Amino acid sequence: MIDAIPTPFIIIFVGLLAIMAFVGLNAVVLVYLERKVAGFIHRRPGPYEVGPPCFPHGILQPVADGLKLVGKQIFTPKGADSFLYWLAPMISIAPAIVCFIAIPFGPHLQVINTNVGLILILAFTGINVLALCLAGWASQNKYGLIGAARDISQGVAYEIPLLLVVLSIVFMTGTFNLFDIADGQGTWPWQWYIVYQPLAFILFFICALAETNRNPFDLPEAESELTAGFHTEYSGMAFACFFLAEYAYMVVAACIMAILFLGGFQGPGAPGIWWFLAKVYVLLLIMIWIRWTFPRVRFDQLLNICWKWLIPLAVLNLLITLAVIAL
Image (cartoon, rainbow, N blue to C red; front, side, top):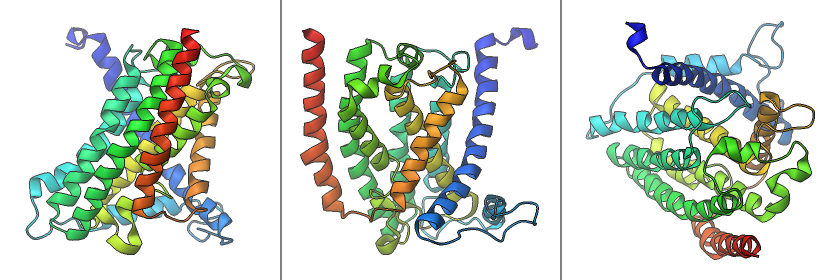
C-alpha cells in the first residue's frame, strides 16, 4: 500500500510535518525574544518569574502563554457569519506553512526545488490579505471591519514596490528558483547581491515590515484606536492562529531577504543551514528591535511612504538594473 504512494507526495507530507513543527517552535522562540528585547530596549526586565530556578529569566513564559490560549473559551459573536469567521484563521496560517516548502535551508535541505519557487511564495503570502479581510468582515464588529479595510489598503499598496524589487533580482539572475539564486552567490559577503542592490534590500525590508503588519506599520491592528483591529472578536486558539501566522510570515520574509540579498545558505568556510538560520534570525531581531524603538505612523503617512517614495524608488532601481544588464 505504501509502495503505491508516489515518492514526491511522501516527501511533501513529511516536509509539511517538519515545517509545522518548525513554525510552532519558532513561535515559542520569537515570543520569548520579543518580550526580552522589548524589556531590554524599554529598560524593563521583561518576563522573569515564570519557571523554576533551573529555568531562569522567565524562559517558560511562552509555555504559559500557550497554555493560556488553549484554556480560553472559543465562541462565535452574535450575528457573525460562523463559516467565514472560523475559516479566516485557517486561511491565514495555512499559506504561511506552504511557503516554507520552496525555501532552501541548506545545500541539501529543501522540500521541493521548483523553478517557480519565488512566484509560489509571493502568491501564497498574498492570500493572507484575504484571511484578514474575512476575519474583520465576518465578525460583525465595526473595529474589525475598519482594521480589515486598512489591511487591504496597506497590503495591496506595499506589494507593488516589493514585487518591483524582486524583479530587479530576477532580471539579474534570470531565474525564479530560490536555490539557484542562493547558489549563484559567493561565500563571502562582498559576493552577495546586497552589495549590488543595496537600495533594493532597504526597500524590500521596509515592505516586509508593512506586509507583516509590524511597527511602525501595524495600522490594521492599532490597539490604541481599533481594539486590536481585524481580530478583535477572536480569542483562544483562533487568535493563536493569527498570532502564529504573523510570526511565520515574518520568518518567510526574513528567509526571502536572506536568499535574495545575503547569499542564503552560503557563508565563509562551508555553506550550510547554520549560515542561513544565522542570517534569518539576525533579520528577525532587527524587525523586533524596530518594533520597540519607533512609534506607529499615521495611516496617511503609511500610504504616502509607499506611493510617493517606495514605488518611485523601486521603479528607478529596476530601470537602473535593466540599463546595466543591457549594457
